[in-house]
Image (cartoon, rainbow, N blue to C red; front, side, top):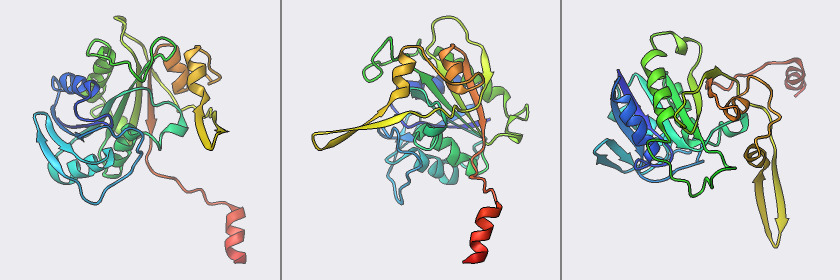
Length: 255
């Protein structure tokens, strides 16, 4: 099996190198990843990017979406599955799906018709400062175990006959393996903004609640699963599905 491995944190990030180590036991892995940090760029795309050879594959001076297009169209066209991650920080809830560079790489692959798996690790913000926390291979051990398991089995078991990509979130490893739960992205949304001294500060209040171990997310959602220390796997589709309905049809007729 040929795996194209990418991320949004940059090619030197430990999380990517941890997945490279894990996946190399079950597949041929070529890294096509951003040369530097491209977190939260969504599906931003360039028209021309520089590419450097790297000991793991290729470093692209562009976004995660750039990496996938360059990889699947030019550098690794024989790819069987794209893996994105492991992201340092969780990607939970519907509202983050379009923001995340990690997930956007998986979505870009899906439009090529190539199965994809986005892998992110939840950092318990009530215990450490996620801005300075620098996890090593030990902390990524559960992410490595889960990624290897899914890459080794999901294609042959027909998982991608129903899903375009998987959004996977895992807890930080603590020596005990976690159960896996198939989830849906939470719809709970609590962004806010505060204006002061000529500036507006945007605040995601959900992270504060998660730091306290609190959640209003229902059973079966990604955020509840990760807070209760289970691996969350959300099977998702990439297409923006149109829903035709009478109200808009009437407006179109009246125009």
